[in-house]
Image (cartoon, rainbow, N blue to C red; front, side):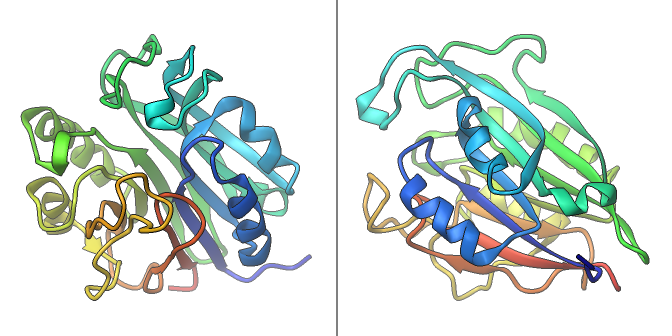
Length: 251
């Protein structure tokens, strides 16, 4: 199969194994080239690899060793973030780097609360016939009510220089920081926020346990104009909405 220099990218917090009846049909319909996923159990990677993808890297943030019904989590082991790519595009990507910017890089903590003490940035070099760039994703530091705290600030102090070293790049993920608050807006002051301004939430009102919160807490940033198209925000797939965009490697 021949591919153009365009690559469809989807970033989605899938909320563990709660929505595969929605997630898998959505991916089949959209046919993304690259998937950046948050809150995925390591044991569920095979469900997606069976859909003609290869997992380039998995970064465990927590080990969930027992059920936590209040968080809709079963005790199924390692839970974290990953990057997958279509098998046909493996020749266009390089090795993934895992950069732990919060917590111990050498151990995976056991789950106690949603405030995971380990956060990592995954990045992969990609190329087309005309352009080299980096795709990066994370599940950023959680805070109560989305208020920026010193731990988020320390995370940004490490994250931003690392992202700068990747330019040009596409950076996406669950930021746990609402647009309009300090942490999100710090990123938006350095990079280009591609989520349309008329979008008021990336939390699904029907599927999120907290209901209809008006918070844009997921992000799709680029380091320069023209690298991607405007980001689409798609509901009905998880407790977070999917961010769908297309990388234009011709520019």
